[in-house]
Image (cartoon, rainbow, N blue to C red; front, side, top):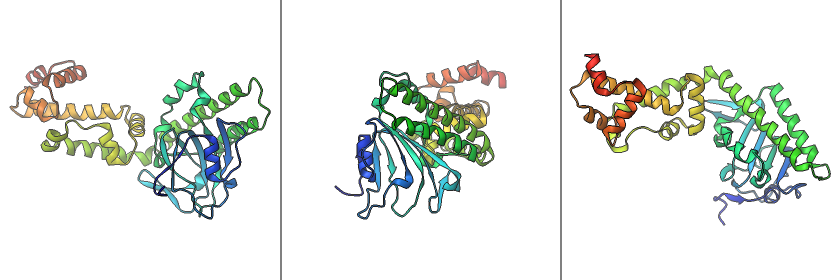
Amino acid sequence: MSTNLPLTINSITDQRRVIGLPGPAHPLIDVFRMEDIPASPDGRPRSLQLNLYCVALKRKVNGKVQYGQGYYDYDEGLMSFFAPGQITANVPDNHQLEGWCVSFHPDLLLGHPLARKIETYNFFSYAINEALFLSEKEEAMITNMVRNIAQELETSIDGLTHDVLISQLELLLHYSQRFYLRQFNTRKSAHHHLLSEVDNLLAAYFSNDQQLADHGLPTVAYLADRLHKSPKYLSDLLRNLSGRSAQQYIQDHLLEKAKQLLTGSDLSVAEIAYKLGFDYPQSFNKLFRRKTNQTPLAFRFNAN
């Protein structure tokens, strides 16, 4: 098999074998230190497809990592999150990392409310350049939670082991969520440029008749791709900065363009709908009325 292809990891045991660690203490959840990963003389696969959940903190990477439009040292304490099926780079052999990783198989959550709730943690859908940067105090708190999980894994398994592990894992995810929301606020100055970039992208899109005709209305995925963000991260970030989701942001720009055409052109409502990328004028009418409490024709009449 070509080493350019990602290697699929289906279990905790598989993951430990690939990174050169001994077998796990528990078949469905694991904690290991980055410092304990041995150097690999024959080289590891360059990327892994993990069919596991992973929460990791890495420090002491040689060089910097891109975060949005900036670059930051891993010395800050960088957390990354991966859901089953995502592809991640393996630990480079030329980097002496510090940190830890908590990995758990989806089967660990079977029959527990966390199995459903885990989908609400959007950070599992974020990309590495949208990672969580921790303050020194936050890192100490998170690391202590991980240490408690590791200690529980060293304890003899009994009837309460599963419940204790789930509770500790859920606490770790709760605090990760808290610190992620905090990051949106503390890094607002670094993110405010995003609003103008989104505005410029949407203005250019709605002024390009051919693009609207060929591709229809702009999507959150389109904006995210152009801004090198994941759709969920972009929507979360816009909601925090503007109070609106990415979809709402698109609709607001659409309405402003529609109002300009209704008051500044002789185009019919149907022609405006098609010009704005709608397949059916009825869909345009419905959205316009829902957002403005009046029909496009009523708006045109009242504006003139």
